[in-house]
Amino acid sequence: MTHYSPAGGVRDRAKTRIRNEIVSVSLRLFAERGYEAVTTQEIADAVGVTQRTLFRYFARKDMILFQADHDYVERFERYLDETIISAPTPFEAVASAFQSLAAYYDDNRGRVSLIYGLIQGSEHLRLIEQRRQQKIDLLAAYAMDGPDAYRTRETPPSLPSRIIAAVLFGAIRPIQRAWIRGELTGSLADYAAEGWAPLGPIHDAARSYAEKFTASSQD
Image (cartoon, rainbow, N blue to C red):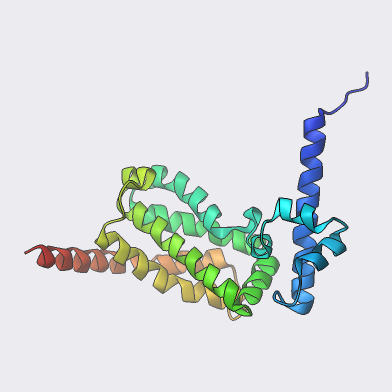
């Protein structure tokens, strides 16, 4: 008996193939000529689709670079959704989520490094990247306020948690960037594990400072 795939499944696979082709071709062109020098029309021509079709998949050129499969903010949030429930403490939840992100980076080092280089070469992309890093800090701050605060996000994170998130990621990001630039050649997951280990006391000191500061402000 012959089995036929549902039409919807065929269409979905075709869309996924085209989407992946757009990303692959775009990254190749960006690597060859630089992000700013490549137009969406040139990408469409290289893929073999119309510019209108291209925009149905990606409304803006920068969205190709930050597409979902390699959106580290979305990925970190998914990891944190899991660890905030299972980890013993908020600090360990954030550390575990970052550890998972680092392992993903290890598996995709070439593409991660390419995208980082493209971002550094474009003021427009650097501004977007800055906002994305702020989103990471915000997610971590919500997590530091506990599972309920992280899940509902009805009010802004507390000042102590915002300070703690800024301190923790301010300490870990130089390691991450050095690894992406090739200054560190080992596993980012290993570096992350070593980097987060001594941050526990820093976390405690930051919380103590923040709580003392907020208490004095309320007097």
